[in-house]
Length: 235
Length: 235
DNA sequence: TTTCATAAATTGGTTAACCAAAATATTTTT
DNA sequence: AAAAATATTTTGGTTAACCAATTTATGAAA
Image 1: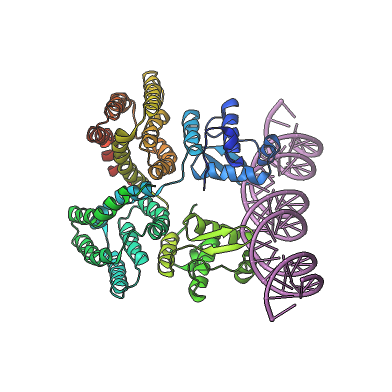
Image 2: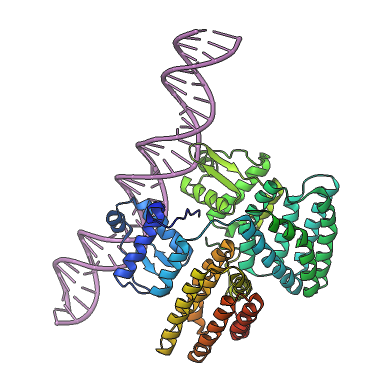
């Protein structure tokens, strides 16, 4: 899922060149939604790259919903028109790897929302899981150990309780990067870990009491220091 | 990236069973961050599944940042501990496919933010692209044609101007699903398309004038009807 | 000519053999 | 015994042959 970007086609990876060639082919042949792409073998021969490369390019475009492969039948242009196809491929080819600031910015946005939604939609079972995470986190901190993982599991539990599978997925995608970057930048020190226990408890209580505004407010406060810290760190 | 979910291990896909076995192996062998997993061939033999299935499972866990494969060397446990590893694999295995409501909810959240950020960070080049999208949309609508694609390209241009690669990526992920679902549910009729032209123009002006609050406010208004419509549609 | 059955060709997916780089074991040299 | 050089094994990645389902082409029957 990694992409290297520069403006000259020279500097694109083989896969990206193939993606661009597929786009040109769709344009040139005026392929419309539902039309069939040439077979992987033909594309392999035409573009002079191994079939595996063609497959990877197709799979990437399939991930973004632009193509659809059907076994023993063919690969088909998705139900979006030429204009959106071109625009989206442009965007995909120019996608940059996420930087830390972008990750934190997005995380805060998502978590303010998931805490609200969790307060509205949480089940009793959700509360039990969250409480477990809460206690695991407190135990680690009071034992003087690093508790970044337990911290994030609590937040993931909230995401799950928000009953929004898309936000849940996005939280899962950014979490590991956050964890590794946390270690790199030493964001959380012992002092903030202790205050974190109380802040977590307050968020939990608000969600338990089904008070969305309070949950969001407390989550915002929880992120306050992180936010300020991160915006002073370059990269 | 599709997942079928039920609570019994019986109903899990082969890949999910393999992921669960890898998790158990990490737990049982107490593998810590940086430790090497057994080779793909050994896992293939141990779990009695083809190596390709092992590879796919590893790649999925790699996508979520839990493992890291290094050529001619091995697959390594990422720099997150056992607790987070278990929690995240739980989440991954219980991930549901995104429903329409969840998609729209997330889209609105993202777009309110990207419009704010775009107002703060947009370059002159961004404005040119947005203006092009604006005019393409207007032209299609005034010609009586369907303009869902041009509509979404305008929104993607805003996402790009927000200079947040994570949100940009997320917008790209949900856009195609939104497009296809729009068609399915006939969300946009001709009338709302005409008012859309003016709403787009207003958002563009606010971003051009670098007024984040106004941009967000106008984006919110733009989504008002969609929001109400979607929350009355089941699934 | 049309329709249906049959056979050949084409499709994406899968598998097993292969590759080069890396890691390890062995041998040789000092 | 230690160090260096060499051979072997192991690794994830790649490729080409293979597979079963599908589609298309062909021909026989109506």
